[in-house]
Length: 177
Image 1: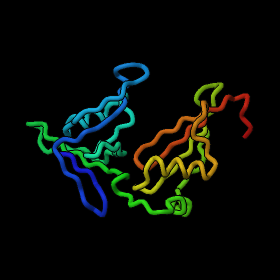
Image 2: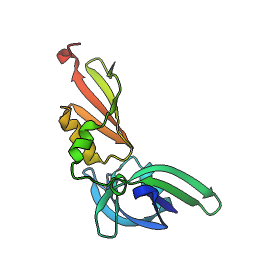
Image 3: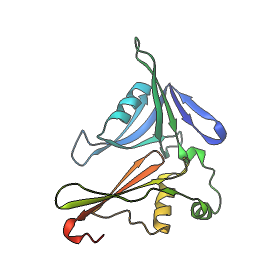
Image 4: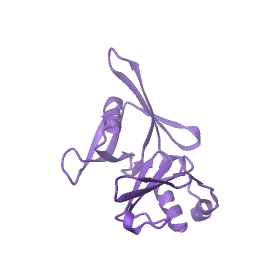
């Protein structure tokens, strides 16, 4: 059973949903795949490290962000799995002035952690904790408004639920403090 949290506490409960994802198991560049999945297959996709950009496709064909929050087995004998997910695109009621809401929200930012990966490379690590219902689009707007570079060859950005982790890779010769 797949349960997706939607607007105003309502939930979508289905045996199968249609998803789209990029599979890097197929090729080095990845291949975009659309398929209908049950809870067991959704669990496999979620746990596979070579699967990225897992989206839920609704009845009208829109790709919606899907965050898997909990996976549990009801029965090991017949491998019954239940997946609880959150879909920020269904949860947020977009207001006319969404930019005002994004700018007013206080995002929790961790202190910068600096460590050495090897003798020549230094890594600066910083975590950002966003509201649960924010979409990736809203996070990108917040980063742009607060002058955080997202696209760069020396920055790696990893999204995990409502946490975004920035890894800055710095060559030791360029490091100043």
